[in-house]
Length: 441
Image 1 (cartoon, rainbow, N blue to C red):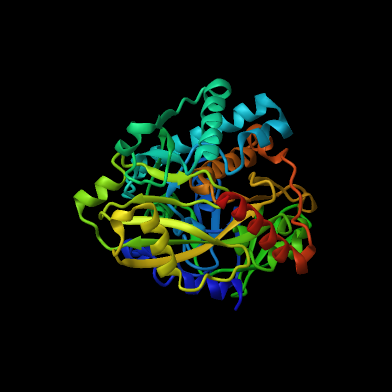
Image 2: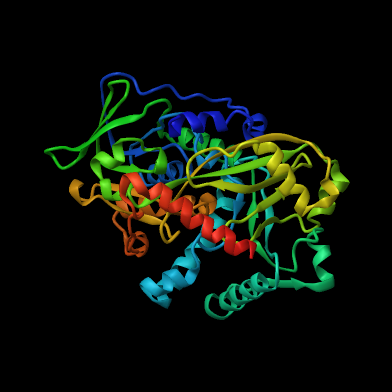
């Protein structure tokens, strides 16, 4: 089964899809040749954010999505908007120095503020709620979490509230955790509602959006622009293009930028949603109302929903194969964290693919073969709900003439996954098995 076939199968039992009906459809790109200032490839959060920001700067923007808006990770993720990056901030320090790392961390906080700003400005009803709780499952993990809290306060002026001992049940009613750190700036939302809201806002501003318009060709033009062709035979001539499709770019990325495609891997991540628990029980699980995530390498993450369910993510697949008996195994993980939910049913089970980089740092840049007229955004590594919004803003700034903030990220070095096309997936599976064993021990 291909990645796309597996992906379609994983969308069938999504609580997000069941609670965010699509009221607007965008027609495929009509036949013929279309001109624009910027062609955006990918109708997820990064592409929509860029389209919004570019349009507000006066650009004529055409956005092409191969499936439906929000089809990929943007419409299926855990819904947690968290400070920082998927990698430790010290990874950025090691590459770029402390001053640049402080700048990157500050932009991650800006990304959280940007979500709130867009929700308010465009009237997006997406169940936003403040608060994030990082939790530790044992003494060693608690020491690592405390080290992070102290680092963020000392170097990045970002204090978190440390919680342990008898105070912990007032924040999370689970025997699994021994310590926690709370951040009020982060939060959680319904990602598909948010993505669809951004699409409606972009269309209202004049962005031309076309679904079911997969890109099959991308080439430079003699005039210094970019020419794109869709699977329906339509063509687009643009001054600039943005590739924001991550692992869903299909054959286009390996063909036009093989090194780019080799630097990310698709990782399957899976979520379940319980039956309705009632207001009282749902509120008692996480009394602070925050999104929760542990600090294991192979982690669990969860939150309660607006209709009083528990949404729980925690299994991953590095081989792109969906785990067997997904709903049952995830229900066991959920009741292992919250024994008071033992016997409760799982109503929804779904998943999707995120793009991870070797370092888990984001990979932003330009394609030199296109005279730097083609930008790309990838490698969010499962931490992109907030950062994708900021990334779109940085691309828009760069295309408008100020690349200073975009180039901070573009300076990060990224290595391809080892093993080449044939062996990199087995190598990743073995590597992640090691980390999973380390977490268990």
